[in-house]
Length: 95
Image (cartoon, rainbow, N blue to C red; front, side, top):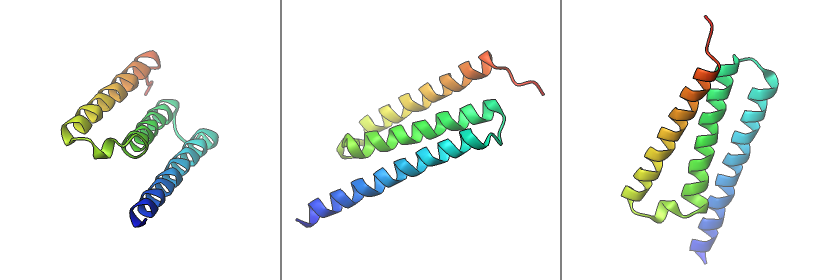
């Protein structure tokens, strides 16, 4: 019974973190304090963090072997880097 309660509490905390990150994303977009390229890069990074939370806690990736988790993490990092590079090529920064 206690194990189920801990799992539910963990899920609620992770859900709260996901809602909080989404709120931060909305604030970043609506306040428009950053340049466009920094805003997009930040949003991509926050989306990656949310994807890690979802994969780790709601898809039980945290119970898998560490090597599988490392492969997924490396793939996510590479995908984020490619998205950022392609965005910066499409929208060059003019200094």
